[in-house]
Image 1 (tube, rainbow, N blue to C red):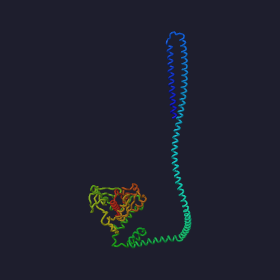
Image 2: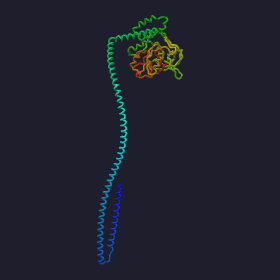
Image 3: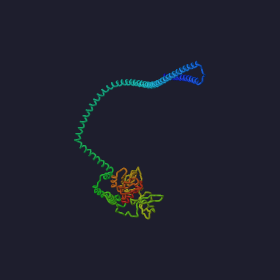
Image 4: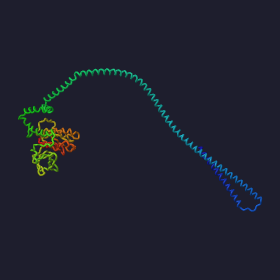
Length: 473
């Protein structure tokens, strides 16, 4: 408000000075024009009185001009002073503006401080409420503390009693431990011997009871515990049991059982020593070049003979004629003669039948009738693959074989070496084995069969054909 009044006052003074300056300038210019006009106009010869009057008038005018010049100088001095005052006023205005800015800043700071004071008052009120609440809680806690002290005294008394009981219990345990150690030193070995003898007595009692109920249990026991030292006694026992009634059990087909066992021993002899040459079967009466072993397949309603006589390669021939007395079926093992690129089927080997062929009597549950398969014999078969191994094993066990499986992705090759040495023939499912398997298996061996395709029927067929190729059946 003060700044506005000062500015209006300065503006008023400035306007008055400007008007006075314009008025003086106009008066001076008028007098100057009159003087020049009088000097320029020729005057007639005037009398002396008139000249004197003119002189006086000139002096008077000169004085007036001097007075006007003095006034002009005074006015200029006044203008200069006014300028200085204006300058001072401007400086004062600037100072007042600065003071006004400071005051406004102080006012805003005061407003902010007022807001902070208001917030602090609210915080103080909250703290006071909290303090009152805490004071109330403290009073409650003091009351609870007094109650807790009373309960603590009781707990302390109980803990002392518990401690005393623990100490007495520890001492009693120590005494008991010493007693057990002393008794164990005196009677421990006797207890072990008694337990061992009781276990042996129980085992023999179980064997006696099971043998009385089922004499076949004795055979299982003999299989588990019989060694090569018992073979002479076993053979003597067999000789005493041979009669015309049970002579049929000592023959399998045309050959004597012991003859077949000897052939199996000759075949397994390869696994007992390291050989630098491939194993070859000495008896070649079934290895005529024209006769081939394989199985049947069907493509485009035409029969095809798949030759697997040589294990390292597989040949396919179209079937020219069926000279056997059996109906042709897919995946059936057959023997054929190959001439001019065509096969003539001479023998069919059925792997399934209504009744088992040359299969020993076995108790079968009547509640679960199932399909019966041709009996191959208790040959040890190893199946190498990674899929359907349990199904293949079950199928070959239905043919009477003793089957062992090996998954090369889960089991090591060291384990495989032991399994091969225990087996009589080896079947390899080529589609799901790694290539590294061929570093551990010689696929050109006659007892090794590599299956390009595999299924339950093909596993059964190739097992039969491999046994035929090795002249085991």
